[in-house]
Image 1 (cartoon, one colour):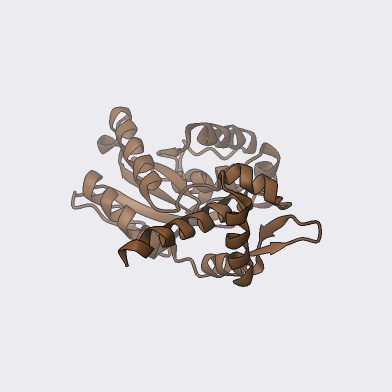
Image 2 (image 1 turned 90 degrees about the vertical axis):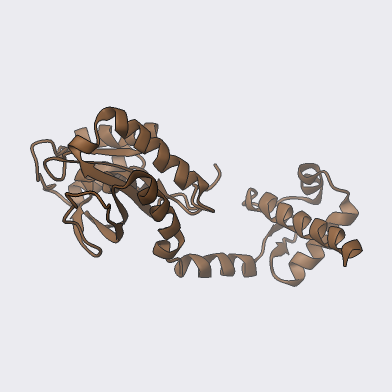
Length: 259
């Protein structure tokens, strides 16, 4: 077993690296391109490609270029359709609650609203009234803004969304409900990598949030940390944001698709 283990691991690693390269070539990759990218001899590539093609994980065009195969795409889409972000992200939420001891939300976008699909309460007093299955206008919550900023990543698309859902709710005097101002806010969110809610949804409550992509171009969900404003001044907010981004980055597959 010891003698065969290393070659077996090398074979699996070679196949995985090859799939990664093919994933970056939407129009296919030639054998020469694969050999250059992987620094492998063509003889090794032929054997690996033959095995991948046999299982439907790779396919070859008439011009000889190789593409990801239909079976790999079926598995990926099948997994995505069954993706339960609550199960995958619960350990991340628990680590954040343990470290920060504040309210942790997991939310998804549904039209004009954010829907809370999970929530962890702090042990500190003054818990928030939100609940799993509850809704809030997306544009005035941090978790909603984190989703909007990357779901509608251009000013034009954001303005179309705002027009479709006009008039936008205005729950507090700090709510950003003018479409042009909201578009500027979304640009800031994308530049910063996270969103803030400075009492825009509920007076006296502040929140920060960041998106979770699971390899997609757009966010699958977003995680937020909420607290009474007295527990989330600017200095602590910076620390909370660092913790949030660190935990999302440490969550397997939670990052965005490579550019």
